Amino acid sequence: MQNPETCQALKFGLSNLSLCPHSVAPVCCSSRYGLALLSSYGFFVVYSLRVNLSVAMVDMLNNTHQSSANHSGSVCPAHANPPRPKHNHTASVYDWDSETQGWILGSFFYGYILTQIPGGYLAGRFGPKWLMGFGILGTVIFTLLTPVAADLGASYLIAVRVLEGIGEGVTFPAMYTMWAAWAPPLERSRLLTISYIGAQLGTVISLPLSGEICFYLDWTYVFYVFGAVGLVWFILWALLVFDSPNTHPRISERERLYITTSLKNELSTSAGHIPWRAIVTSVPLWAIVVAHFSYNWTFYTLLTLLPTYMSDILGFSIQQNGMLSALPYMGCAVFAVLSGQIADYLRETCQYRTVAVRKSFSIVGMIGPAVFLVAAGYIGCNYTLAVTFLTISSSLGGVSASGFNINHLDIAPSYAGILLGITNTFATIPGMVGPVIARALTINNTIEEWQTVFYIAAAINLFGASFYTVFGRGTVQPWAVHTSYSHGD
Image (cartoon, rainbow, N blue to C red; front, side):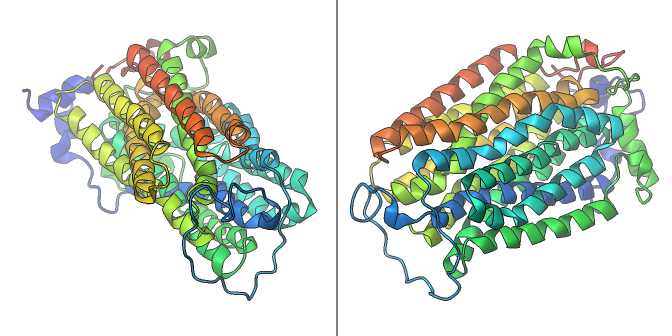
């Protein structure tokens, strides 16, 4: 095996061996890891505001008018639960049928899909900091208005959720654009998994906390509490974040040189020109599109409907619901961080090519969830196995965070924001139609109906994993840089 210095020099075409691990800019108190932590907080806010409605929805419905499979209101026997406090439960409840619920839960994604590609373009043109900042701030404001919109009617709530989606739609493309300027190639998996673990933590924390808020207060406070958390993030983001190492006033010179030198051979020298024809005809990009779409079908189906499944099928109360619905995403967060560490380790040793690492992690992160999701539909009212299988399914999905999910930065770092906008546009479609289809298939809330929902999600996942395995790539594509330097295809 080659020694690390020779190996890294070969990977990047660099003659300056000072960029090897022995003299890498320190991690502790570094600006790049500070950005990772603050962006993680940002994605915590993004996903908190996205998923809290899933739990609140259980409490927003007038359950005395909901059809039920048995006397308990769920297929399985209801669980014992302490009586809810009577004070402060003054929030309105609504007579929304199953179809209306599906449209409300899916409406966010109708706005989200609109700003994916524009988000990538605008981030590259005007800088990602303020685009992401104002995008999340807009979502925060509309979250605070959610209780008012719900009282006005389902159509108003749908409109507010669409506007929230428009604001959040720019966040991932903007952040990918920022990481293209901040993430050294051999630290990408680590930095991006730290950054995007915030999305999982937002789900993990907001689901149980939303359940507790509904239990002790009422559902309106779910939106007020998380809206306030988002306002705090915006203030920190505005004060502490900068678009690139060269514009950061407090970064050390050693770190600035380490980042910019490691990226100099990967970024396009003509950033003003966007090779649209080459981008839209790139097979490696379409491999990411298919994988991203497929993975998100399962992810968004569970994200929006798991609390409903916990309530209508397994009979968990609103308080238990939030906690148990969070377990799958807690596992996903842990596996995402571990996969980032392992992926970069495998690449740094020079024993594994980037494309092999990305494909292997994508296979585990897509086929594994499919298997356990289907299994969860066949254990009846075995509550322990149901929660265990759903948790394992989502946990294994976290492995894909170091697979296709960051492959944009491998094949075209200069245009990563635009590429992410393209793939996320297609990957948003499952969020738009998945909940609507799932609720249409589960009108009677039987276990057999939910088995069909799980089968569909698993089949789509298997197809996506297969397509990406065949057509995925790990090198910078020729159209993405004038002089292309690979790093281990």
